[in-house]
Length: 221
Length: 221
DNA sequence: GTCGTGTAAAATGTTCACAATCATTTATGG
DNA sequence: CCATAAATGATTGTGAACATTTTACACGAC
Image (cartoon, rainbow over all chains, first blue to last red; front, side, top):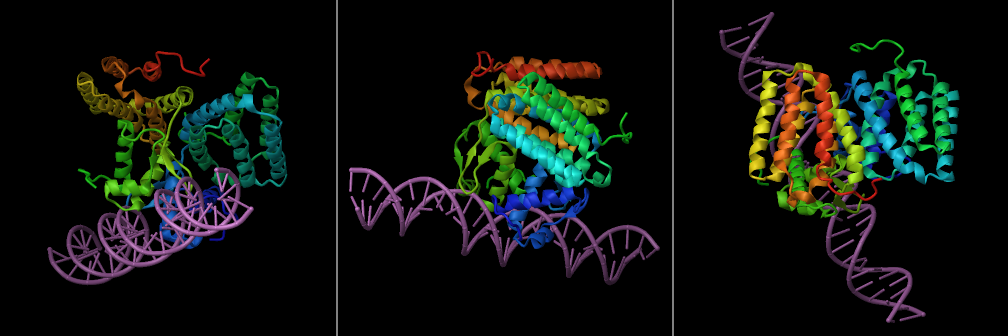
């Protein structure tokens, strides 16, 4: 187990590593995952591995069948666009409503910091990193609500959504454009107008999620 | 471990028992739950208990602090009404859209069966049982979509919602009225008009969830 | 050649033993 | 008597062995 930082328990560290492996594409949707292999890879016993895997099952990143097997999950663009995106909008606008009035100088600096890193990642065309930063940006909104259920549900929804973006790492994402989207969003926050911020956030999420659909998707009507 | 039926692995059976204990009010929100006590109660080792508890943590029914303690979760009516209800509507209407066209005679019979049991539970004024049947009714909608993510997310959202109803078991719930709500909903399904069914479902969820709010809630504007 | 059966191997489920951590109590010094 | 530190107990985290279930494959019957 060669993890530089020690944050939280083993199962959380391992769960995070597996998440990364999935989003990097090292583990592909449908691929079988066994406890033994992971426990050898990470050099820890099966206990924490099992619990980490169970976390990911609940998050929707793995699918398991009792006594049979556990595989990396898959998601259809139908589920992502018609189910997950609307839920994401619910959660994030709710969080925005609750957190917005409390934001101060410090909070806006955190947004700017993430945005700056996005700009750098965009220049290096580092899509995986950019994807993480995108998530961090929205996490700042979600966490500001200070409500456990909000964060917990959001994690689950967002991780599932991200499954859709795995294979497309080599597609020509326009990261500059994505960065601009976040710039616009942050500017709307800075006006101090909550209703305007909410409308912009909705548009932003819809825009961001339809960016990678420039061609007709199978099964769409 | 005195469980009559053997369905699934121990952790799932135990998780279900703990869920019931919470919704029955045997375990109250804020109450501390330890692995050792549960493992003695259920007469199994701590392994499956840990995993069952982790399931419930992800569902939002328990809250755990690393190396410290695990307690039964709590929820505010604010979160329930402004966050969970809208998400529930998203999920169930999506499921309805996907499943509705496939429903046949058999599916409607299942609805009728649950409805009949609700009538009986209402006559006996058995609120906990009624609550279970309410869930079963909506689960029929959710499952008919045949999508894993839908069921998984819905479970999580619904369990959290139900936390709000625990203390109020002794309040005068009008179970007859609830039964009628479901009758009306089922009738709307039987018209075969999807849009009408969706509208009725939305109203039904809103109605059902505001029934127990007959007085102004703190913090509401 | 195909089907079924039985056995071995692999994977998961369960248990128990031990380590690490936190909260509380108990000494100990001022 | 109070404050601080060491010791204790309770609880959770981790590792390793055992039990159960599934899967794969070889073997033999038809």
